[in-house]
Length: 158
Ligand SMILES: [Fe+2]
Image (spheres, rainbow, N blue to C red):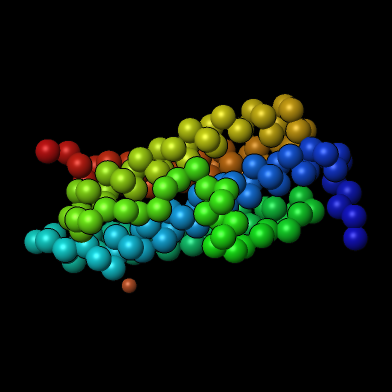
């Protein structure tokens, strides 16, 4: 069935394309956070192991919401590792070390990169593509990432 929600097909496609990039970023960040959860070592192991678990659970929920937003505007949420790696703005984890500070710095940079991307798109979605719903959705998503970034950043104070 056609999606008749008062947004043109061209605009819905444009928003879906941007959300597909976001979905790719969220999936890469999810795996990177799991990598930190699994491989962290050091005298702060247990606390950070649990902290990363809390964060990947939040990312799991975010991923589901982004994919379902894509479906709500009439597009399919393509979910293959190949397409995620092709579309993501982020780099996969490549660190040899497994200390918490290193993991946290890398994850923080990724959250901040997603926050900047989302902030840029809030007005574009509402003004250029007439999609107030997705604009509102990513505004609240940006706030979630800002809070997650704050939690990461707060571990870095000397
Ligand atoms: Fe676990």
